[in-house]
Amino acid sequence: MSLQKEVMEQMKAAMKAKDTVALESLRALKSAFLLANTSGSDVALSEEDEIKIVQKLVKQRKDSAVLFQEQGRTDLADPELAQAKVLEQFLPEQMSEEELRNKITTIISETGASGMKDMGKVMGMASKQLAGKADGKAIATVVKDLLR
Image (cartoon, rainbow, N blue to C red; front, side, top):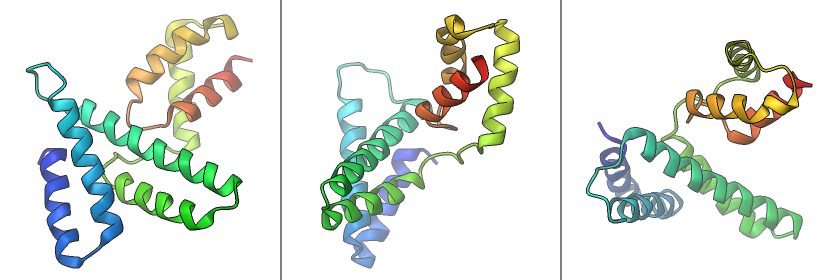
């Protein structure tokens, strides 16, 4: 089942259960999908595009929560984190730190990278291969650590 159809099914379930947090986050996701679908291209969203949209929304929620927490507004941070948790169910399982390290080590050996000057090359390949499976920030941290 496509991600968009799964979101619709989850929305129906959230409406029946009167789960406002889930419903609000699923509506935001549906809206993002509709916006991307009507962005002018006639091509339907691929599964990879759908995952990128979900990742973007999760990141926005987490970033907002961090800002709210820094300002001492846990009353605003908690709903953001709850929405991020609802959206994360649509992402593929994230790689562990060890799996990420092993995969990036393989990519470094494939590209022949030898130092920080080759970080862009490694990041490009890693971002493509690990899309949806790891956060970009986590990938960058591991690449920097391994190229030092």
